Image (cartoon, rainbow, N blue to C red; front, top):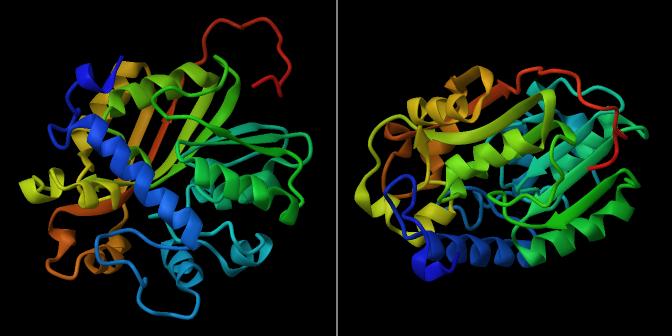
Length: 287
């Protein structure tokens, strides 16, 4: 499918081709610059000495998480800590949608151990290059990064135990396809553990249709009922989307001209692929 005949955005906002271009451009620039954070007015992330680290603790990461990952992987791009809700176990295969500099991937690698595997997928070449450069610094031989869109995952069917994502699904113009792809690559019984931004009220048109706002994790947020419906339609069960009550403090900082907490909140999104008839035994690391 070409950009010229691409479907309309599933949130009725920005043209999909323009949205993907805006997202790729923004995150390519962030990968080169070395840090940022969500929101239109976040260029300096508050002007702190280490804004990514300060923001990470506000989002739910512990100091030991920050100390465990070498500098250069935490770019301050999340809206939560998906590894905290994932319940990762040794030996599992983990997929991170929109892996950025690899921060969540390297945290996940500690949990799954040498027998486990972590795959990060990102659509931005500069991000993938940066993340791959961070592998050696983090001594993470069980982590790899692949270039690809989360609507078209470069991952085999039924090969992943857990999917993580941190403030990325909102960036997609085709969230229904993202959810379907997540279902495809999960093993039976596999689970979804996501931190993302969701809409709590109708977004103003200038947010939904502005490339800068959409690429800054604002204009593409979907309402909770819409996401619940997408997950259920894809086949997921045990769907649970929980707004984070303490996210108002940082959501308010994302736009200098208005209080975005009137429209948006961070949330955790969890779901599970049902267990079906046993499949033929496969190599756990054959993703």
